[in-house]
Length: 272
Image 1: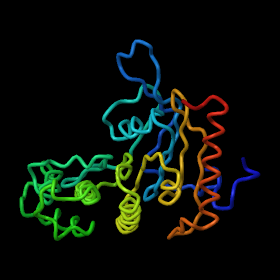
Image 2: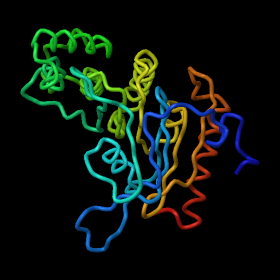
Image 3: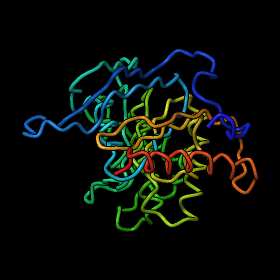
Image 4: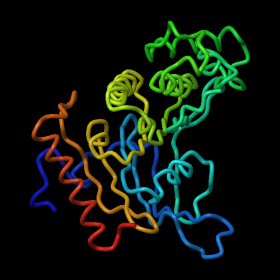
């Protein structure tokens, strides 16, 4: 692999050490009560630098969404260790998640959906409203504050979902294929919007996607999962300068190299 790796890619060992907000060592997960004892994830290792952007890619059923649930603390790992260095402070949450479906409450307007994420954190209603309006402006939807979810496009609803996550001021943002249900034009626009928000906020992002082009466009590093149970097949550091040009030769070479690694994993039995 090293002989054909383009300059835009480097293996993890070539990266400079940086303080990690997420560290996983030997992480394995199996569903409690599964009589077969089958694991979904096995021997997963990850170090997400503070302020970094890591994409996790792989085929359906490989455990990408499960990984986010473990990181978020929604389910406990079966074996191994995971630490998230993001302490909760009054008025904020350390970790927030954005899903493929924006999951907006249909009985609340756009601004109210963002405020919902702050309930239980911010007692003062005026402060909740102010924080909600601030993040709504950041995602470019200030003029849509009073609209109901059914009056918004798919891309607008997803922006509301992102705004709701940002409103709690997390250190770590988990994103589970947040743009996969959108059309290509809307998807590209939201990718650029996400990069702007990431750059401006200094937040750390762990991003799950099936789309290798999306992973290379967004992330500092791409982790490739395959197999049953899911394991890391390869891990690459993306060295392309930002802002990235999708049509450039280096971008295409980078995507092809990662795709070749995925194809090779199927050839050697690591696929589904």
